[in-house]
Length: 476
Image (tube, rainbow, N blue to C red; front, side, top):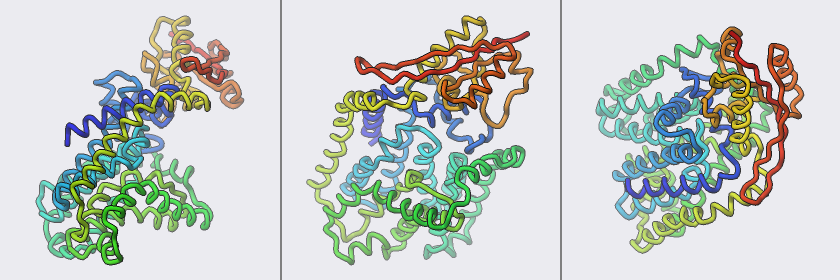
């Protein structure tokens, strides 16, 4: 299985590198790189784990598109390995193979996973937390309890959305028939203690920075009209189920279920399987309830890490049998799918180029080259700081050889540091507000350059985009 998953990672990494070669790295990805240049216990938008992972990764690997896609694909691969381990306790070998193979058709484990961000990093973290929780409830072992607490803290450090996972698993523990034995043991309290201990540094950081991620969340996802959030909650559920349509449809085709079988799939009678069912449904559905109560909008894309237990839920019923020929066909389809996508990847890249990818990502590498050229004409010192439009700054910070720090986030540098290091200010030429800020930089010794960049892809012309660049050299 490890060899199969390694091959899957390589195939999808190659697909991402080729198919996305005409569009560059998504701003979500360059933003995390920018955060990693200024390691912290928290950031303006989110908790810090994604930035920590990126910092560690690029301490070993070069900052390149292929290596970033490789990191991104490791996230679902780790989760799939955990799914394989969980399935050992619930599924026979053929069902294990079918369940895991079907999960590779879910876009969260390939297409969406290629965009590394705070959602992607949750995929293995939710899988690990779920696995350790199930083992802790079954065995009440202190080791599994500690692992569950640490994994839960990791999930919260990835994104606060993980509160729904923790709430859902708490519901699963409370409704389980073994709840009295579980809560009288040391296991749940060890889990809670380990989780709080791992979260303590970030918890201390939050009030020191005015709970900035919460303020950001309220600004972006604040109180909305009731019908808007209600329809959004329904859309979240429908969209989440739509993402897993292929596994569900294939399972129904194999099982040909009647009403009794469907009831046993969705709400099993056995204690172990019912614990799995609640641990699946509660974290998936609680966000819809929370959105309506809190009057906030949610999107089905955020259900990305919620499907660890889907194979067990769909296939663990003793009323379902999987023939060897059916398992072979599903496995063959799962093996062929990434190969077909890899073959199609050059065509996809060309089609994206013809459609005109956003310049903020497609032209970031070329803009970084131009920025460094202008900077080194003005000073022999390395480029340390870039500011202006946030997405442009993130892109240049990612691609520039000097690995500069973007002037965004919670800890702006004092004027003396900016003066000592100098900076480059970046704007889209049509962004009047940014250009006004750029003019202020000109007033303190900066020099403005107006440039136009076009990124062609083979013989397919790209769309030109004009930029304003202000270079402010260091001052002694």
